[in-house]
Length: 117
Image (cartoon, rainbow, N blue to C red; front, side, top):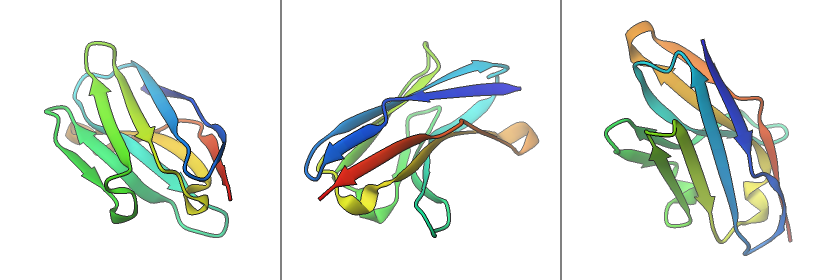
């Protein structure tokens, strides 16, 4: 099992910044991909950003140029720096990890991000 614990959500005004962090523990061997998803009220959960163990990243188009994902393999943490936040970024953000060998998804409990206009 892999446990993921998020931190860093909150309330911010439009144009502001937040930094989310996710600490992974447990059997993290061969967890290849980590990242962030979000779920807004009435919408499906969507991928925001992912980072592979080798460092390659992927972003949803709506956050490119504003969000940056980073990973500290030594500390088993992943961060999401969110700048120039918009009200439409308001959602519950979930940390995600994926183990390729067993096709297993792991999820954190979620952290609320609210951007006021």
